[in-house]
Amino acid sequence: MNAPQLDIEPLGVAKRDGDGWRTTWRVANAEPEAVRIVGAVAPHSQFRGEISVDRELRGKASTQVSLVVRIEGNAGGEIENAFVILLIEQGADRWRVLARLRVPLDQDARPRPRVEAITTQRVGFSGEL
Image (cartoon, rainbow, N blue to C red):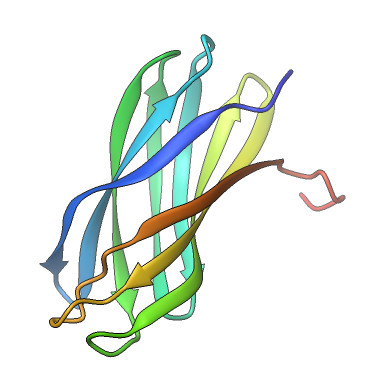
Protein backbone atom coordinates (compact mmCIF):
# COMPACT_ATOMS: atom_id res chain seq x y z
CA MET A 1 0.00 0.00 0.00
CA ASN A 2 1.29 3.45 -0.90
CA ALA A 3 1.91 6.10 1.71
CA PRO A 4 -1.05 8.43 2.32
CA GLN A 5 -0.72 11.82 0.65
CA LEU A 6 -1.95 14.39 3.14
CA ASP A 7 -1.62 18.15 3.10
CA ILE A 8 -1.49 19.96 6.45
CA GLU A 9 -1.87 23.72 6.84
CA PRO A 10 -2.66 26.07 9.72
CA LEU A 11 -6.09 27.72 9.70
CA GLY A 12 -6.96 31.04 11.21
CA VAL A 13 -5.24 32.58 14.22
CA ALA A 14 -4.23 30.71 17.37
CA LYS A 15 -6.47 31.50 20.37
CA ARG A 16 -5.60 31.41 24.07
CA ASP A 17 -6.68 28.16 25.76
CA GLY A 18 -5.61 27.95 29.41
CA ASP A 19 -1.81 28.00 29.52
CA GLY A 20 -1.54 27.23 25.80
CA TRP A 21 -2.65 28.30 22.38
CA ARG A 22 -5.32 26.45 20.37
CA THR A 23 -4.05 25.97 16.84
CA THR A 24 -6.33 24.63 14.11
CA TRP A 25 -5.04 22.62 11.15
CA ARG A 26 -6.68 21.74 7.85
CA VAL A 27 -5.81 18.19 6.84
CA ALA A 28 -6.60 17.23 3.24
CA ASN A 29 -6.43 13.72 1.80
CA ALA A 30 -5.29 13.79 -1.84
CA GLU A 31 -5.81 10.03 -2.34
CA PRO A 32 -9.09 8.22 -3.14
CA GLU A 33 -8.70 5.85 -0.14
CA ALA A 34 -9.91 6.91 3.31
CA VAL A 35 -7.52 7.12 6.26
CA ARG A 36 -8.13 7.42 10.00
CA ILE A 37 -6.42 10.15 12.03
CA VAL A 38 -5.71 8.69 15.49
CA GLY A 39 -3.41 11.28 17.05
CA ALA A 40 -1.55 14.56 16.69
CA VAL A 41 1.58 15.67 18.51
CA ALA A 42 3.83 18.72 18.48
CA PRO A 43 7.03 17.39 20.15
CA HIS A 44 9.32 20.46 20.04
CA SER A 45 10.38 21.73 23.48
CA GLN A 46 9.21 25.26 22.54
CA PHE A 47 6.07 24.19 20.62
CA ARG A 48 4.54 21.23 22.46
CA GLY A 49 1.12 19.59 22.55
CA GLU A 50 -0.60 16.25 22.04
CA ILE A 51 -4.13 14.96 21.47
CA SER A 52 -5.83 11.68 20.70
CA VAL A 53 -8.14 11.78 17.70
CA ASP A 54 -10.44 9.21 16.13
CA ARG A 55 -11.58 10.67 12.85
CA GLU A 56 -12.04 9.15 9.43
CA LEU A 57 -10.78 11.30 6.59
CA ARG A 58 -12.40 10.18 3.36
CA GLY A 59 -10.61 10.19 0.06
CA LYS A 60 -10.39 13.55 -1.70
CA ALA A 61 -11.77 15.27 1.42
CA SER A 62 -10.48 17.47 4.23
CA THR A 63 -11.09 17.95 7.94
CA GLN A 64 -9.90 20.18 10.77
CA VAL A 65 -7.88 19.15 13.80
CA SER A 66 -7.30 21.43 16.80
CA LEU A 67 -4.19 21.09 18.93
CA VAL A 68 -3.43 23.13 22.07
CA VAL A 69 0.30 23.89 22.22
CA ARG A 70 2.45 25.38 24.94
CA ILE A 71 4.88 27.97 23.69
CA GLU A 72 8.31 28.65 25.16
CA GLY A 73 9.51 31.74 23.34
CA ASN A 74 9.58 35.50 23.39
CA ALA A 75 7.22 37.86 21.62
CA GLY A 76 8.72 38.75 18.24
CA GLY A 77 10.90 35.62 18.28
CA GLU A 78 10.73 32.53 16.12
CA ILE A 79 10.74 28.78 16.76
CA GLU A 80 12.57 26.83 14.08
CA ASN A 81 12.31 23.16 13.16
CA ALA A 82 9.07 22.50 15.06
CA PHE A 83 6.70 19.76 13.87
CA VAL A 84 3.08 18.75 13.92
CA ILE A 85 2.96 14.98 13.49
CA LEU A 86 -0.26 13.14 12.65
CA LEU A 87 -0.58 9.44 13.39
CA ILE A 88 -2.59 7.85 10.58
CA GLU A 89 -4.08 4.40 10.07
CA GLN A 90 -4.71 3.16 6.54
CA GLY A 91 -6.04 -0.38 6.57
CA ALA A 92 -3.59 -2.39 8.70
CA ASP A 93 -0.76 0.13 8.13
CA ARG A 94 0.18 2.98 10.47
CA TRP A 95 1.91 6.13 9.24
CA ARG A 96 3.34 9.34 10.64
CA VAL A 97 2.76 12.46 8.57
CA LEU A 98 5.29 15.09 9.65
CA ALA A 99 4.72 18.77 8.91
CA ARG A 100 7.95 20.70 9.58
CA LEU A 101 7.19 24.21 10.81
CA ARG A 102 8.67 27.62 11.30
CA VAL A 103 6.72 29.41 14.04
CA PRO A 104 7.04 33.19 14.28
CA LEU A 105 5.64 34.62 17.52
CA ASP A 106 3.74 37.91 17.27
CA GLN A 107 3.79 40.78 19.81
CA ASP A 108 1.63 38.70 22.21
CA ALA A 109 3.84 35.60 21.73
CA ARG A 110 0.91 34.11 19.75
CA PRO A 111 2.20 31.38 17.39
CA ARG A 112 1.80 31.94 13.65
CA PRO A 113 2.99 28.55 12.28
CA ARG A 114 4.00 28.08 8.64
CA VAL A 115 4.49 24.65 7.09
CA GLU A 116 7.87 24.31 5.38
CA ALA A 117 7.77 20.63 4.34
CA ILE A 118 5.62 17.51 4.71
CA THR A 119 7.01 13.97 4.81
CA THR A 120 5.43 10.59 5.51
CA GLN A 121 6.98 7.61 7.31
CA ARG A 122 5.61 4.15 7.93
CA VAL A 123 5.42 3.40 11.66
CA GLY A 124 7.91 0.65 12.43
CA PHE A 125 10.01 1.24 9.29
CA SER A 126 13.16 1.36 11.44
CA GLY A 127 12.28 -1.60 13.61
CA GLU A 128 10.46 0.41 16.29
CA LEU A 129 6.93 -0.49 17.33
